[in-house]
Amino acid sequence: MLPSVELSDYDAASELLRALSAPLRLAIVDLLTDAPRCVHELVEALGVSQPLASQHLKTLRAAGLVATQRRGREMVYRLVDEHVSHVARDTIAHSREQRDGA
Image 1 (cartoon, rainbow, N blue to C red):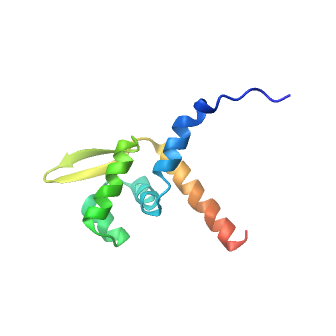
Image 2: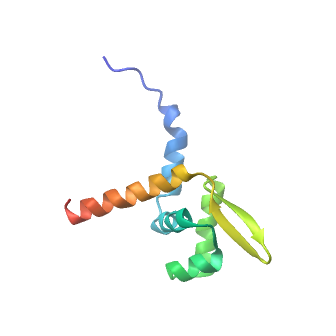
């Protein structure tokens, strides 16, 4: 017999996955896995506008996945927890395997 499951126990994990559900946010987390970055670095790497990148960074901050630190006039974004990078990179790897038929 299977143990009883309380669905509310999965709320936080569901919120995390929701925050990562946009391709741009997943790409931002992937880039932040390697090192903290300023907005202009993310904009350049992703080829998107600064307002669009900032909007997605705001969502990631609200979800508690990234934090900021001021460096002169710039805000530097970093991942709060390395578990997020594992979730993102494992998801990316899995989707590539599925796509490539592995």
